[in-house]
Every structure is written in structure tokens, then in C-alpha cells.
Image (cartoon, rainbow, N blue to C red; front, side):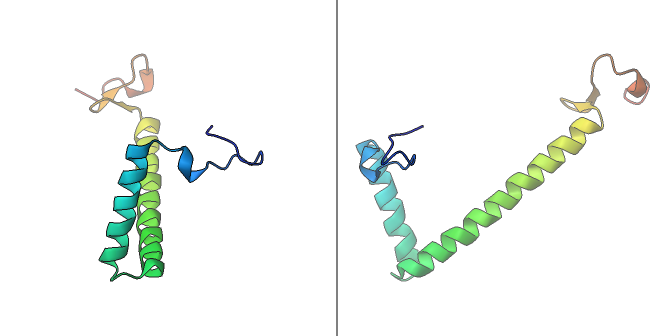
Length: 90
């Protein structure tokens, strides 16, 4: 965990290394500029983008889990020792 402030686990923005702060400042400026200088619109756009990425992660988790449950293992090969799958793959 990062530095604690008031015991709540909140990191101080100043606790990040300088290059990371610079990168974040540039990214924030770019996001605001892309939204015509409106910081509120930039925040809304970033929330939408984050929700999209979270949905993609959930879909990938589902896809991986269902593939694993079907017994696929690295390139459609059965899991070694799984007798139920013998003869289904060549």
C-alpha cells in the first residue's frame, strides 16, 4: 500500500515520483484539451472510457473462464490427464 494519510490509505499526490507526476499532468492536460478545455467534460469522457475498459476486462475473464472450463489448454489441447477429453482433439 502507499503512504497513509490520516490512516485512511489515501496517497498524497505529492508522494508519486516526479516523472510519474509529469506524465499524469501531461495526460490530464491532453484530456482537457481534447474536450475543448472543459474539465468536467474530460472527467465524463474518462469515466466512459474506464467503464468500456472494465467491460472488456469482464468479457475477457468470462471468455478465459469458459475456455478453461471446456478443458482447453494452450492452443486447444486438452489438460493432461483429463480422460473425458481423450479423442476429442487431434
